[in-house]
Length: 102
View (cartoon, rainbow, N blue to C red):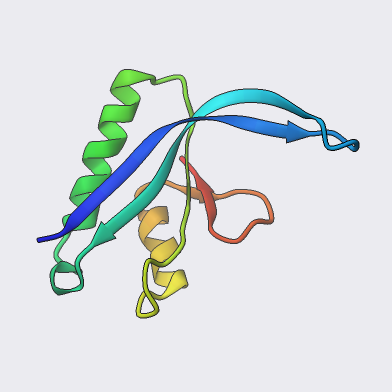
């Protein structure tokens, strides 16, 4: 079975009106969540996400956890994907489609 979650600590980049960048707060970024099609709907992604969130909170509990809900293939419904992340406690943030935070 091919399934994975990848995450790392990122730093918020803030751009001023001249395009100059400054850096804000660090945060966890979940960059990829994938479960092979044949194993979807069996709780694999939920289990991986719960374990990953627990590890992130244990290592750096003060950091927010963010992700961008982007389907990994054409068969994944963005609304169902958003509902999945919401069921784990994530909430939509900002105007950017799919950007969520725990």
